[in-house]
Every structure is written in C-alpha cells, then in structure tokens.
Image (cartoon, rainbow, N blue to C red; front, side, top):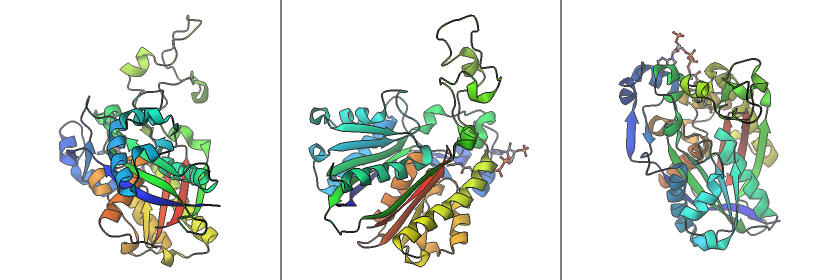
Length: 352
Ligand code: COA
C-alpha cells in the first residue's frame, strides 16, 4: 500500500477585516462579550459579488499546487468541503475545476458536506484513494463564505459573531510504501442532535423532523412550493441556528476522545505530538481540550482570534499558517481534530 503525504499547502483569507467593534455598529453585541466567550477579535469577509467560496478555494489551491511542485494538470481528483457553497447544486468541486482552468482534464470532483469536520473527512477519503493506488495527486479544499448567509440583526448575534470567511487547500500526494505521511484517521457521527447546529431551510424536509412547526407551506398546492417559502425568508428561518451550550458540551468531550483514539492506533502518546491543530470553533473549547490532554502551549495552534470560525477552512488555514511560521518541520507529528454540525467529528494523525 502507498502512503499519503501533504506535498503542498496554501491558504487564502480575504482582505476585508471585520472587528468586533465593527459588529457592535450593526447589532447589540460587544467586543468584551465576543472575546470573553469565543476568543475572537476579528474575522475576514469576502468581497460580495467578486469573491465566492469557490474563488477563495481556487486562490488557496494555486498556492498549494505551486508549493507541491506539480502543475494544475497533474491533479487527478478534487475534493471540496464547504457548508456555504456558491450554489445549492452543483457543488463547488466542479466550479473549482473551472476556476482553475482544468476542465479539459475531466478529472472527478467530490463535494463533502461535513461542515466543521469536512476537511478531516476529506483528508481521510483522499488518503484511501491514494493508498489504494487510484490517484496520485488529490487537491483537497476547505472554503467558506459565511458572510453571505448570516443574520446581521441582533437576533442572529449568537451565531454571526463567531464565523468568518476564508479557504485552505492541500495537495495530497502518493508516497512510497513505508513512508509515513498519514498514520491514522478516525471519523465519527451522531445524528441525534442534527438540528441543534444547522441551517435547515431551504430543504426538502417539509417539517418532517420538526413536528408541526409552520414553515408557511401552501397547503392547497398539490405539487412543489415547499423548498423555500415566503415565511421562511420573512421570519429569518433561512439562517443557521445553534444551541451553543450543547455544542460546547459535546465538543469538549469528543475532541479529546478522538485525539486519544488516533494516538492509540498509532501507538503514540500526547507528548509525541509536535502540534495539534484543532478546528477553530472557539478558543475556550481549544483551551479545554489542551487542559484535558495536558498539552503544553507550544503543542497547540490557535488563530481564531484573527479569523473567527471558518468551518471547513479552519484546519487548513491554521495548518498552513503554522507551517509558514516554522512551527512544523519534516518528520514532526501533527494532529488534526474537528467537531461540528451533525454532529460529526474526527481526527487525522500525520508525520509531516
Ligand atoms: N453578544 C452579546 N450577547 C450575546 C451574544 C453576542 N454576540 N450572543 C448571545 N448573547 C447573549 C444571549 O442572548 C444570552 O443573553 P440572556 O442571558 O439575556 O438570555 C447571553 O448572551 C448568554 O447566552 P448563551 O448562549 O447562554 O451564552 P454562552 O455562554 O453559551 O456562549 C457561545 C455562547 C455560542 C459563545 C457558546 O455557547 C459556545 O461557544 N458554544 C460552542 C459554539 C461553537 O463552538 N460553535 C461552532 C461549532 S463548530
């Protein structure tokens, strides 16, 4: 069996910086509240009508491809993870292919819908394709343009202040047998609380999972008309919702579990981790996980203060930044871990 290594990594964050003080001007919130509860000071927003989830993903990809020392035409598969796609369908994978100008290669493109753990899921899928010998150079992207779909009224403050835009990409390459690369990956999910961190409209649910809640469906209509109703738009039912405390409680339980699971599989200990890149959900969650696992400050990388939670993009952006800062050398043990909507969670352990 081949091995899978990260041959190149890139990130892209938009220029527009939005501080907590900027948000104070549009909703009833405060810099103090946001920093104390989340550790976030500012985030970036893409330029409306000019940037999209796909274009940000493409900018990060170009850097990753160049650093991998391959050409765009060498990419033989695309995996794109996002919860804020340009279109409901088709997914961003084919749009990225077009944006990169490689439609002629007619390679496959897969879209991943695992929200905060999308990058870890994507990495695990890519690893299997590479190890089995099916592909040699897979481009994996995590990108989000949250700012286009958040509720900027005070009603939405519990969710909106947390999220930011950006993209990260890696080129995963086939390595020789025995070369270490990705050592272990574990994926999990539990759909019990699917609606507790979700954007449920538009969708085909027709109220099914949600009891008798009225979504404004036109009862007299025999066919159609249920995907998106006027009521959903007028009453702000088209924005993400989150039961923050439940998410927090589950996250601090599942992060350590799945990190220890990875270490156990690889026969390693927490002291062996050079750097843990947790999904940047909330600084308090990351600090809690660090404490439970008794990791030193130098073993954990956080950048949520600058970029907020960029969901599928958060791990590759942080990994790229850590690498650019010289925090990761060849042979270092890197642990990536994520938890989020679904709930889904997972970890990947790799030798850089
Ligand atoms: N600014 C000011 N006040 C706010 C606010 C904001 N942006 N958002 C919520 N509040 C208010 C609430 O309305 C509530 O007011 P009330 O007591 O008058 O009703 C109060 O702050 C406390 O709200 P609560 O939701 O209980 O706060 P919390 O301590 O749980 O913190 C989160 C909220 C979202 C920061 C926290 O639950 C959390 O971090 N959860 C995990 C979320 C996460 O990581 N999501 C990403 C998953 S991948």
